[in-house]
Length: 328
Image (cartoon, rainbow, N blue to C red; front, side, top):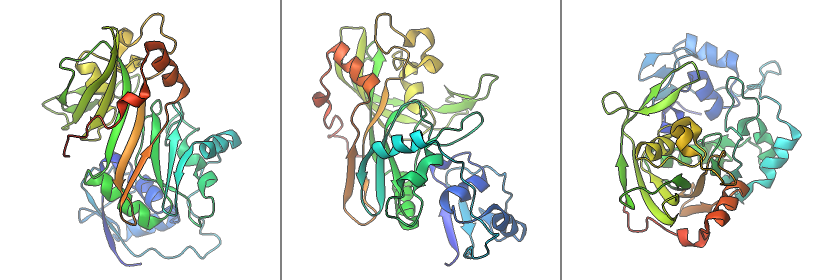
């Protein structure tokens, strides 16, 4: 393996450097990484780095040739043990698989990665999705814990690099479906609203901030509506900021149904079957396949959103190709 210079993607924003290596190179253990850092072989934008440094999108990380882990004491990163029921859930959630890519329909309520107080997550159960591959699948992007839908995994390091590139250069076209409270005006358009991170005692949250925030843009279209009470939106994010769709929908006065974090009391409707569950679903994704051509995957609606579609009289077949005319 030769020296590589890899760019940090938007989906890797604010990740610790040691976690970045853990995702990209799971065969590299912590002791080896610390040695590479001490000797200056790993650098961020040409500068020496520490394992706790936070990386930012666009930064370039120098990765030296990585030795094979032949010493029995030189174990790879320890992965937390997943619950058997979580492994079974992930296997049942597979909606596409080939030699390079796996796509799952991530259930709402299951985090993609661990963190403080989060021990149940997709990352911990990825060994259950090895199937016949020699390598453990790798995460190449993320979804919020409470968002359901298409989540792609790379089955080898080559596929991971190419998929990450597609997300980085915005070749990936992601369409989300949401049920929102009220109806946006106009019925279709583009929301350009910068977003910043605001820490707080109840955990960090994202807020609109045109002065200090990072650029964020979302196309939206009303597919159907239930009077003035609720609307079914198709959403196409141009950027990939944390909680972007939730912040943008709330900012234009139509919070996503069930999103108490950003919509407060206005996000809940009396008499609705699933008013406390976030009604946001990563419906489809289209991007270049690592071996050529296009990969297109669509995720069926989860039960809690399907129930509300039936309640409002929405027909999911109406939502095909809502942004066909956009050349992004």
